Image (cartoon, rainbow, N blue to C red; front, side, top):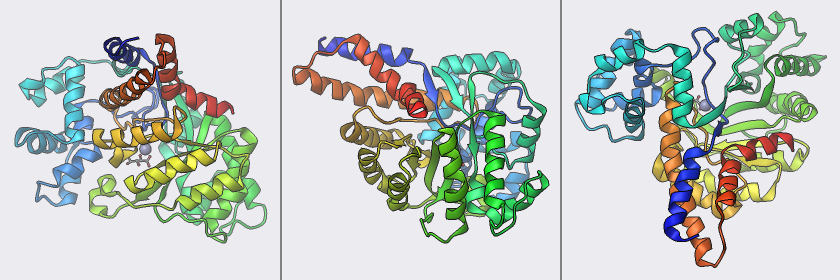
Length: 411
Ligand code: FIX
Ligand code: ZN
C-alpha cells in the first residue's frame, strides 16, 4: 500500500466503522422527558453557558430563571451573532447544523427551530445515530434520581442501541445522605455502614445491576479522592462496590479529577478540574487484580502517568478525552501519546453527549483527529518497510472504537 492509498483507506475505514460510545448522558425516546434534543437544548449545553458568561454581565440566577428558549436566544446572540464562534463547543453547534442539512450561513435561529419542530423523535434518533456513525451508546443511569428510578420500575420500552451503566457517585461521596433513600426502598442500612449494612448495599447494587442490565458501574470523583483507609467512601468501595463488581465480572469506571461547583451560581457549568492522585488508580489495580477498572482523568497533567499506569496493569482500561480535554489540540496530543505507550490497547474517546445531536459533532471532530494521528503512525510503519492491509486497518479501528470495550467487559 502506498502513502496516497493509505490516506484514502484510513478515511474510508474510519467513515465506515460503527462506534460504541461508552459514556453518554443520553436516553432512549421511551424515557419520557429524559432525552435532551433540539436546537434550544444544543444552545443551552453547559459548555456554552460557561462561555456565554465570559461576555455577559447578567446575574446567573436571572439567566437560569428564564425559559429555555430565551436562554438559547441569549447564547445564540452572544456567542454566534456578536462574534465568531471559534471555541470547540461553538464549532460543535455549526457542525451539527451542517450535518443535519441546515443552512449554517443563514444564521436564523427561528429557521432552525422550525426544522427541529418538524421532526419526529424516533426518526430523528435514527438519523443522528447514522450521521454520527454510532452503533451503541452507554447511558449514565442514576438509581438515586427519582425520575429515572420511576421509569425503570415502570419498565420503559428498551432500545437496543442504548446500553446501561449504573452510576453510583452519591454512594461513594455522600453515603450518610443516601442511607435514607436506601431505607425508603427497603434496604436495612445504617449511617455508619454498621451491622448488616454492607450486605444490604450489595443487595441494592445487585438489584439495580439486574434491573438495568448494567455493563459497568461508574462514578465521577473529585480530584481529592484519596485512598485514606478509614473513610466511609473507601469502606463502601472495598466492602460493597468492588466485591459486587467482581462477583458480576463488571468493571468499575472511575472518572477522576472533577471539582464540583467551584462557582455554584453557574450550576452544571460551574464544575472545574483538579489534578488527581494517580496513586489511587495504582493501588486499586494492584490490590484488586480480580477487579477491572475503566479510568479517565480530567486533568491534562494526569494523562502521561495514567497511560504509564495502564502499561503496568491489564485490569486497567483507559478511556476518552473527557470534558475540558475534548478539544482537538488536546485529543491529538493525548491520543498520540497513548498510541506510543499503549499501542491499540485503549479506548480513545467517548462523547459524553448530553444532548442527542452532540453525538454528531463530538464524533465528527474526534474521528478527524484520530484519522490524522493514525495516518501518521501508519506512515511510520510504511517507512519502516511494514506491509499494511485494508483488513488490518479496519480491524485496528474496530478495536479502538468498540472492540476493546467489549473485550474488556468479557475478560
Ligand atoms: O460526571 C460526568 O459524567 C461528567 O461528564 C458530567 O457531569 C459533565 O457535566 C459533563 O457533561 C462533561 O462532559
Ligand atoms: Zn459524563
